[in-house]
Image (cartoon, rainbow, N blue to C red):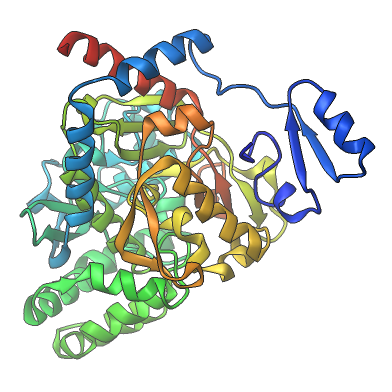
Length: 475
């Protein structure tokens, strides 16, 4: 059988122990092996859980896999996802490129209202309201936000890290697909420490955001326009060979990007300061990797019959997924608290449930799916090097393809696993692995750690049920 997080095969589990056999169910086999002195681990494994019983899941699986549209729809969805060629073409204010007006805010994850928002989401929204001069104090901001329009970034062809809050004056990376002409957006990365995306909103956070809008954004815009389109896929492919996985480790990708734009930034107004800021922020490229992932995933959307996952996102309360064959519908369940390492005196009690759109990286074959390319990541999220290798290898079981451009050197340059298949997740019980930062649960705290998390199983069984319903209607 396949080891999973639930049965002990997660990071730091059986994969690092001297176990030659694993048994499930009745104890007869375990007892027999034990009598032969074979190292054995008996696990309490059950079929994947979700709404309905095993018969319901089996019936839905049979319907979906028997859908006459499925084979071609999945193949086309995968071709589109793998064929996307993201290029950074511009940097512009959100109010110019997104359908967002003063007083409205975008956020990470599936739809959310203020009354259900977690601490870091509320903190980020408060900071954005202060940034936009909609309130003079955090208390005033809360009153404004109770009735302010809130909408997911994903509904606007955008993604945002952690809380993912976007307001009109913030600047956005504009990424275009050289293959299809599609466009995706992501905000600029603030760096680490007390930052808005982790829910901090103190004076230093607002001051930095105003500098980003007044100086960093324009300098990057001038440099990108002078340089011409920047091939982000090429940078990502090279960074994987240099030890990044493009979610929690972007050191190589950031260095490659800064080198690419350095000459043009040096000649832009405010470019020297912008260059120092980007070069000193190892996570600067993350937002570009996210926009690239959004572009690739969106290219695979809206193919009836396809069970390819095109979005995974969290808002600090819910974890949601979207599937190519079910349009814009979200399938949601409770967001889990990541398991990992904590900063300073922080611990699990300080952690907020998982948050952010950055799981678009895993959706498109990097991040947690590429941890084998970045063994050093275990020093940041916990575990050991063999765990990083095992995490990537496990993801091949639930994906459609291997990425032709994103390769893992230690796996003989095998392409990263890409294209999550709802049916494979439900059939195997193996869920996508995500490596992520951990936000403090209290508004204003900021980052408290980093670790691993998986989506709740029910989001995939919900999606399977919806695909089965559509297959029945379409038959």
